[in-house]
Image (cartoon, rainbow, N blue to C red; front, side, top):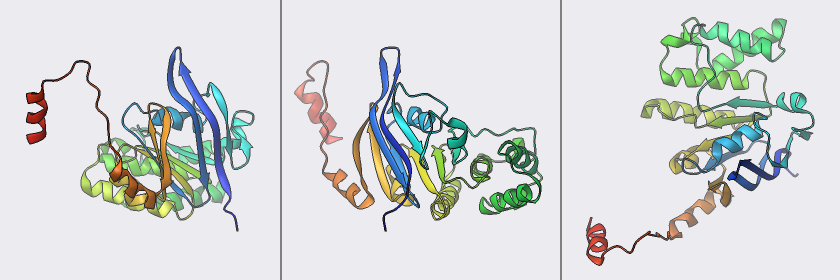
Length: 250
């Protein structure tokens, strides 16, 4: 049986005046799949994420979320998206419970359904012990968890996470990666990162961007071929042979 396509982006481009941040990008996400969007800083990952979530209009291209055109029906399409930007959109002067209750109301959740959704998101993100604490007093790892909890409150089909482990310590990174793997069992997830081991730890497939273009798109088994890629270095001026030999020795 063919898997359901929950996200389909075709020919996405985004220009800032003359600068092209993303060029002719295709991206697809199937139900139950965790996709790693990999690339160095400045590769166009965050711009792509903002377009996929409807926070930035593409210059050209189309985006379908669970069969709904994001550009033509943005409010309806966004009901199927959960989004954690690189900086979690948390309110530091609220407790965890107050913030999640506020977010649930924004998603239109009411009554017993809202209470159940908050309980489930809090449980899945292991926030029970800090539910009554001010977000300002939480560690960065817990703030990330709160950010993920708000992204999954309304049980979206697609969860989009932009650099969810940046700035975390090794223990926090392991915990967040475990959470992402668990999310992948019930949602389709896009994970943006510049760290290859992170993709290998949690993703089913990897799509690599460089200068706004896709340069690699394959399953994790295909990532092994990356070890055979050679890089060409271009210098503005020809370096001295002695300098190159010195670099090689180091």
